[in-house]
Amino acid sequence: MTRPIVLVFAAALIAAAPASVAGPPAAVEVHGLKFVPPIAFSAPQPAGLDALLVVHPPGAKAGGEKVSLTAVAFPKDSGMSDAELLDYVKTTFLATSASGKPVERTFLGKPVKGQSLEKKIPAPSNAEIYVVTKKGGDKVVLGFVFSPGFAKEAQEAIAGIAATMKE
Image (tube, rainbow, N blue to C red; front, side, top):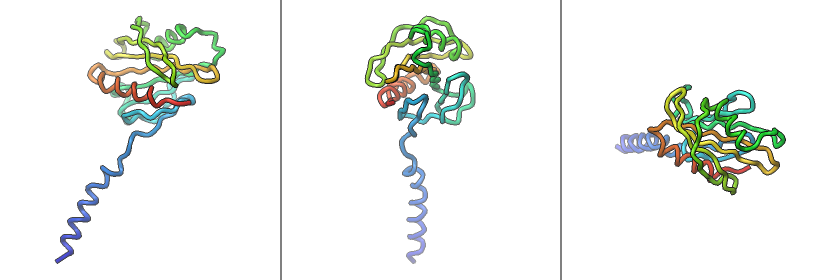
């Protein structure tokens, strides 16, 4: 008589297990900068030169991502100003030369000025780009690109990344 009750209880535990196993998104590290995004991102993948790319959702194929982060590393003696680094990454990695509107976020405990802009290639999207300076003077340009329909979630993701970023 107790066997059906035990089976029902065991089935309920098994059904609940996947929900309890799923935890917070994993930490991501790009060029010595580590952060815990509020949504899951893929593992970093090479994106050419000294660039790494992470995307959400993690399994998205090229063009299917809702938000991406391209992180490009530069040595402190690159010979380029922050404005030149922004322009270089915009054209080389984000496929745009559009002028951006000034924006500011806090990365590594310091206010960082960046640009917010609209992209048209390869599909209409929005972008934010920042130059983050590490303790030793090396720089990492962070280029966030997101689809217009995912703007609210992308803004929350960028804010979460900025708030949790550490060297």
